[in-house]
Length: 356
Image 1 (spheres, rainbow, N blue to C red):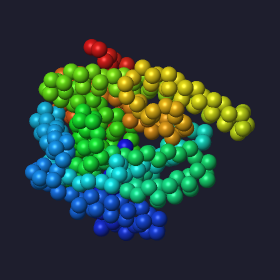
Image 2 (image 1 turned 90 degrees about the vertical axis):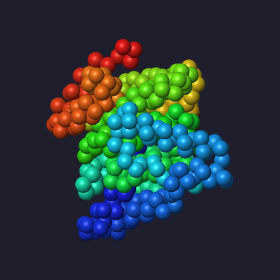
Image 3 (image 1 turned 120 degrees about the vertical axis):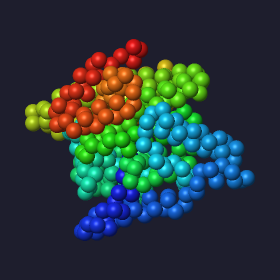
């Protein structure tokens, strides 16, 4: 999940936003990102400092190598991103709020000037996120607040590396760097699923190539296991979502009480399926360590990140594994009307085979 906070600084300088709540939200976004920038130091200086722990020195050196790999091999527009480092007080850099109506799987959209609408809202501080969450819960929405390890400013500014990255296992840190840099290639207003699925596809394909270069077959096997867990979880979520959509379409024929009970049963069944699936994998899956409690917001968020990943990976294959050609094809795809874009990605997904 990403929050494009620094863009708000430009908007506040050049547009007259009215209303205390609006101004307060943009102000915390500006202040949060500005605080990161002011506290950051060049990565190379941190590496050379005698007080830097050896493990952090290694992670920072790896991050610089990953950024160079992203530029040279993945053809990503790195610029000055991740050249500075800042230590955070907690493992997340922002928290994101997702809110979905009680009997729907369509997330609430927050809309902003220039960057369009998004299916989540990010905060640098937990308290205002919880205040906004309470407002949606009072209106009957399912909600979810999750910590976000990184965000992108789409190349408007040089996003810093931070301890949220370096606290991750090495391969996952590298994958996250690729994911964030992918957002600099293309950003489609109002289509979170397109943006996040594309970045996730670049993350996966980039990590595969990186691990091949590093000659780390055991890490690649683990990455494949993680991907398989995510894919099989996605299949479970898709099946449950279809049942929920059918149930919600009958809200006029079923009273609220029975509707809630049937919804609860389906989500409990999904949680049980996820728990049984997770027993076969060495790491926690996309919903974390079981037992888990799920609602419409969890499902909607997970689908945003995974819906079109196979389609984008297939598009890369059909571009001859040439990343520049792939990015041009993605840019062309982003220009298509929403219906045609979705149809194309679904067709590509149907042709994708992990093992070919």
